[in-house]
Amino acid sequence: MARDVPLPPDDELVERLRGGDEAAFGLVLDLWSPSMLRLARSFVSTNATAEEVVQETWLAVVRGLARFEGRASLKTWVFRILVNTARTRGAKESRTLPFSSLLPEDEGPTVDPSRFRPSDDPHPGHWNPGQQPQPWMLPEDAALKSEVRAVLAEALGALPDRHRIVVTLRDIDGHSSDEVCELLDISPGNQRVILHRARAAVRARLETYFATATATTATSTAAASTAAASTAAQRRGAP
Amino acid sequence: MTCSELAELVTAYLDGALDERSETLLVVHLDGCPACRTLLDQHQQTVRLLAPAASEPSPVSAPACRDALLAAFRDSSR
Ligand SMILES: [Zn+2]
Figure 1 (cartoon, chains in turn purple, cyan):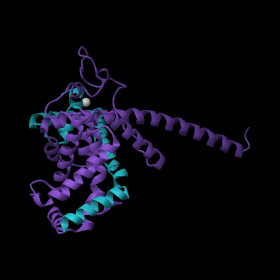
Figure 2 (figure 1 turned 60 degrees about the vertical axis):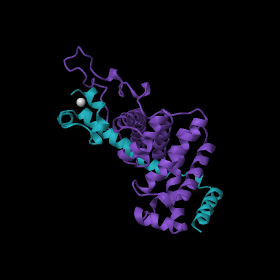
Figure 3 (figure 1 turned 45 degrees about the vertical axis):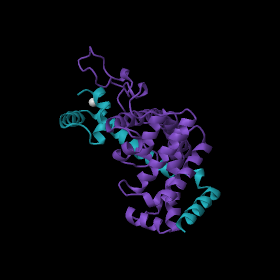
Figure 4 (figure 1 turned 90 degrees about the vertical axis):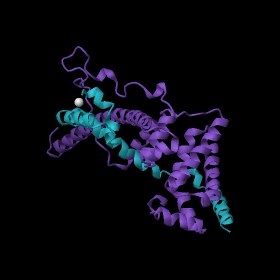
């Protein structure tokens, strides 16, 4: 898998690309295109347009390599071209995603206020008994892992576009906070507000999933031990 | 600091973006509150669970498109 092939350091990579090293170009193409497509998809309305945005970006990268100054990393530079290309296409579809200021969708508590004790309680703002977060049992089983991936995909899909873009850049593609601010022209504070809301929404969805999954596992474990007990009883010749 | 206040500061804390005073209050709260430690854990687990989604396949690596881009690269290097 392309992701497992380590990239050479930036200066060597840029040198190889400028020298026409096709293998190096193929490597970044395979490594970064999936992330670029995912990102583009939040700016434009269809998969087909997102794919065009990615292709257009790579063509612009090919044309612009000579002008790359190395002030940001090569990856950030490429993603910056992608964001600009995607924004231009999004604007043609009347889809504009403002990052310069916060919106109503960025405000309000991220945990249901009814889970905390009311203001007339001796400990206002502390967790209500029975409403505290419970530790998750992370699955090791492959089928359950793919179930968790489906829950994550659904949770990401349900986020507002701006929220999905920020959490995708930070947590899926592993860009730093500084890089995201540079890519989206967003202030560090606003970036963090949006990231927090996005992560909190995904956490809440996982919390619901794990609460149900744990209940189901407990039931099936109980059923299994009942079955085992009755098998043991039969072996002993009991009714 | 209350649990409901802490719940909104988790991301700033994980990014090391809290001022010194808030960070101290938060750490002291965590020390005495297992429920908020679990909440913090869940935020970190969420981040860890999201990371592998990057390796999911995408249709953009379709051979036709890839070949066209490699050709463009070859032409530009001449
Ligand atoms: Zn607490």
